[in-house]
Image (cartoon, rainbow, N blue to C red; front, top):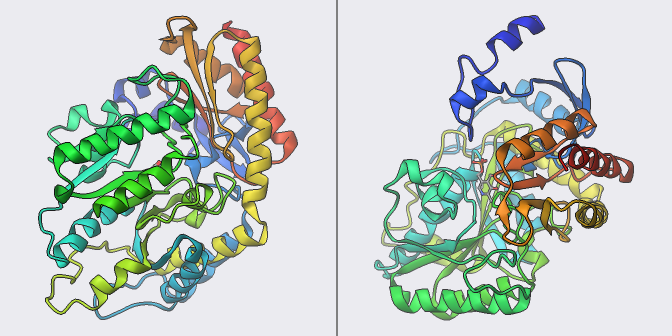
Amino acid sequence: MKDSNFLKEHNAKSLWHPMAHPGDSLANPPAIITSAQGVKITDIDGHEVVDAVGGLWNVNLGFSCQVVKDAIATQLDVLPYYSTFRGTTNDKVIQLAEELRTFFAPDGLTRAFFTSGGSDSVETALRLARQYHKIRGEEGRTKFLSLKKGYHGTHMGGASVNGNANFRTQYEPLLPGCHHIPAPYTYRNPFNETDPERLAQLCLQALEDEIAFQGAGTIAAFIMEPVLGAGGVIPPHKSFMPGVRDICTKHGILLIADEVITAFGRTGSWSGSRHWGVQPDMMATAKAITNGYFPFGAVMIADHMTETFEKDTTGKAAIGHGYTYSGHPVGAAAALACLAETQRLNIPENAAARGSQIHHGLLALQHKYELIGDVRGGHGLMCALELVSDRATKAAVDKKTIGKLQEVAYEAGAMVRVSGPNIILSPPLVLSAAEADTILSALDTGFAAVS
Ligand SMILES: Cc1ncc(COP(=O)(O)O)c(C=O)c1O
């Protein structure tokens, strides 16, 4: 390996980082992480911290999950690649599809379409939604509805249904026919409604209103995250997703659950849809499906949709979509091991317990520090703090303050993620109570330094 001076001198020099300004990466070089164990990461200077980001919402089982590593290593020796395009398949992907079918049976999902990651999964679900309606003779159903503040990856379709200008403006024009509904975000919303249940009803009314305006017969699907994640961890009231389900069913609109971060235990339930008692028509998954060790994803498809595709005799159901790495045997082997380990450890249980511990700890910090305008969480290990410079006006905190806070928290033992005015916490789901306390005390030190 190159020595540390070389790495520091060349940091961000010959690569552009995702979700960052290239100039900013040069001015403020990113932390160089060189190793990891358990839920801890170590940087180039040997500084070890608890990773409260969990890789990027994906390393649910931590960095030392030996069964997943072994599955990958073994599969590389046996069959490192073979395609699943028409005419061939591989043993691991068949096994995985069967396992996923059992795992997602309570969600009503019985078929898998494999991808290389979250954005691919979203794109796949959007495409299959349009195709489903075309096969059924409803060619006019091409539009998509989604939530403001939602995050659905960065492919052109995904960016078009994204509800955050940061991922849209510089890439416009995006896909036509994508329309957005207010998110059930109690801290800021166009209705000035702070009661979660009433806000959920207002957002549902807005959805009904948009459907009436667009015409139900023009809409293919509504896509939503069961708990909005990257947009700042926004858990809706429990009535919201069931309400969306009812409205979609009433109007023949498919419901796509974007569970790229919520599937496999993050919310304290096995899936975010199950958390709210909803069966979606499609579910986009990725990330934790391989514990982040291999780029992989799966779109799960509802049993009731299968006949339309499988019994089609017109040829319209031929899937003109897929990736070289769809059903990659190494990814499939990793996913099989990961699924077994996730179930063996009953991972949602710890996610719920540690999530509640962190959520309560954050509420205590809010009493201590004026900078904390809003605390969001309470549904597994996904929490956020929204920082404001003034609680009365809710003016967002400046970049320098939140940057300093992150830096001090890192020095004090935790890597936390800053996204706009939010600090987002999504640690591995195997986090211990002591490690959760480390995150909270590092944040406390960070806030003390900037308050
Ligand atoms: C809900 C959601 N959908 C889609 C994506 C995109 O996934 P990927 O970055 O693997 O393409 C993400 C990534 O964070 C996500 O959180």
